[in-house]
Amino acid sequence: AHLDRIAAVEPKVNAFLHVDAETTLAQARRVDERRAAGEELGPLAGVPIAHKDVFTTADMPTTAGSKILEGWRPPYDATVTRRLREAGLVILGKTNLDEFAMGSSTENSAYGPTRNPWDLSRIPGGSSGGSSAAVAAYQAPLSTGTDTGGSIRQPAAVTGIVGMKPTYGGSSRYGLIAFASSLDTPGPFARDVMDAALLHEAFSGHDAMDSTSIDAPVPSVVEAARQGDVAGLRIGVVKEFGGEGYQAGVLARFHETVELLENLGAKVVEVSCPSFTTALPAYYLIAPSECSSNLARFDAMRYGLRVGDDGTRSAEEVMALTRAAGFGPEVKRRIILGTYALSSGYYDAYYGQAQKVRTLIARDFQAAFQQVDVLVSPTTPTTAFPIGERADDPMAMYLADLCTIPSNLAGNAAISVPCGLADEDGLPVGLQIMAPVLGDDRCYRVGAAVER
Ligand code: GLN
Image 1 (tube, rainbow, N blue to C red):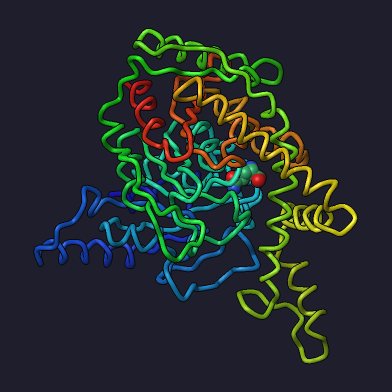
Image 2 (image 1 turned 90 degrees about the horizontal axis):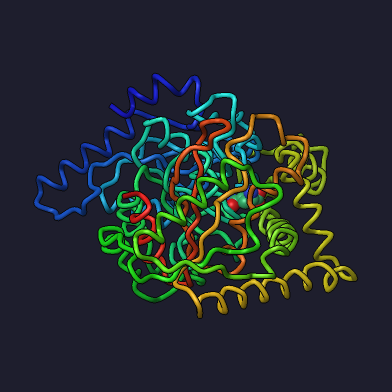
């Protein structure tokens, strides 16, 4: 049924980069066989899922939305991929994304933009826009994403679904094509909080193949989603988020939802996190710096594309031609920015300074979580914007992640859950719930209360 649905709406939505009905049906049959053989499978066995095309898959191509990886077949499965298979989930295909997960609209994909199922002239968020659109368009009940600066939560918010960024190190990066390694975090998308919790538990947890993986038990997020009550919980409203630059309809739904939580028995207080206002510039130094190093591996020798290798050119020339042809403009912008920020003479002024800001943000969170159990804010300042509107204005595009970036810099857990439609345009609004490191269960508990 989901393959049929994909065939019907995909020409309009463009959520997928790769769909292969045969591979999908073979996976489904394998689940039946395992069940028939008496294997005990989890609650998601046999459920189809759309998988972001930044995780390696041994039976499907993996492009990261880039021409430089066109046609590349990974030799191995990412840990997240492997765990999906072990849990018996059936992978429908690989979803579209901003090239190397750099963007907030999926317009930076080398394979054309994905469209928002609510309004096809608008963006589905990014970078995991194919994954959010696939779930919102009923092409898949579940999907995977990665969140480096907001790439799960912002697409979830603008397509009216649930998207969770687990605690950094709570889900494995092994086999995830790296953007900014100190920030990249795999997480689930679903149409409701319980489904997201089930998927979260299916693929998260310690992985010896990822040196930053946390060796601690995953908080029981399914139990928290089932509980879904906020009586007695202390909820902090981040004072710095809201006001100028925020759409009125987004703020209206946000304040109503806070009121709802108060009516459900939560104690709501305003909390100040003064360093959060400096998170965006710090992120746009740290993330490009890490990406400039990570993307050095695309050297025309190891993977995918190779341009100009006709026997007359040096390795350096082939490398330069390949990278010029294979990377899109946003990726080049970030490599240049990151290389500059890391160069000797500028390192302390830019990268060093940004790292200090990162520490201040983590301290703001620590202080806030002394007073409250969770923090809330709008997920993103506006509803889905029109395709093309911010494409030539990187600064306007970067503002989409204003509220999500602090949790990436500090590594704590954060979720986006739907909280109604904005009056101006009838488009979905997301509530962001932020919890301490390894407090992922609190995100689900409060999220489930909002949903009810
Ligand atoms: N939009 C942010 C960026 O462009 C975040 C992307 C992400 O989380 N992968 O870097």
